[in-house]
Amino acid sequence: MISILKEYPQMFVTSLISVSLALALPASSPTLKKLPDGPTVIAHRGASGYLPEHTLEAYAMAHAMNAHYIEPDLVLTKDGELVALHDRTLDTTTNVKEIYPTRAREDGRYYAIDFTVTELKKLEVTERFRLETGELYFKNRFPKNFKVGQTIPTLREIIHFVRGLNISSGKVTGIYAELKNPSWHAEQGGRIERTFLEILNSENVKPEDGLFIIQCFEHETLRKLRNEYQTKLPLVQLIGDNLEVYGWMTKPEGLKDIATYADGVGPTYDLIIDKETGGVLDENLFVKTAHELGLKVHPYTLRSDSLPKWASSFDQLVQKLFVEVGVDGAFTDQTDKLIQSLRQLKKL
Image (cartoon, rainbow, N blue to C red; front, side, top):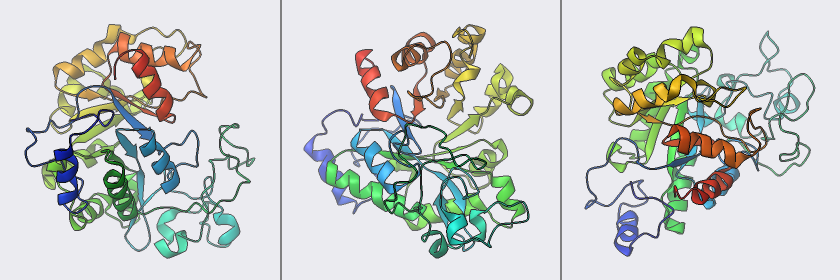
């Protein structure tokens, strides 16, 4: 894939415009790989280190910072649309308690799937805060009490927004979407995978565009997408730190299984680097095995304001992952700082 950090030839821009705002590469491009080569910078929930996560404003800032991809997490609404929220609940990133004080479930939480898009649009998105105390998770990020009218975007809006920014800027930024809690949504009567693909189809998003990636923690969902729905979109298996659930995915046989349905893996970087000492775990066997199987490795989440104990700086964290370990990309809350670090390492 052509890096967005390089100057594009006029023919590329012309081709981009000719598909009427489609997320597509020119027809003369060589055969695309499933996932891009070279360091890939993924804006985790947008520029979430600077603006409230999963807002169009945060996505715009990440795009301006030259992220290769923005990452929206997607959940279902009551009326069958997909909106960008990290949680299936609303009460730690919006003012839902103020606007709909009687709409909580028996557990006291407010769930997106109980609201229509029209109702959700009445909420204001704020910086993430703790449910118990109201304090920000990251105290020096965008102040919670600053009300600036940021709302929850739908997937359709995100697609249109990124298409428009790609056209107006001449850059190419993709969408690296996570399907949140598919099994839970199924219990609620929703089918998040089918809804997602239907929306992409209605918005004329094609696999050959090379600019849309699907990620999920639930391997059954990714298998269904590949085998039942036969999607040709790139798939990435996310891997959490709960070894009782995800431990099998970190073993050679598990990675071999993942390679039958996915194109990459997205592990928490604590599975690669010892969180106490900073030592490379298993002598980099995880990454080495993944690469031998043709899987790209995109760990999460690099935060300059939440460093691991062993790292004295964000640059040290980046150097460890991209030079010593050899990962292919990473999710970050601070796109600009990751790009700066990679440039200093001459990786971009």
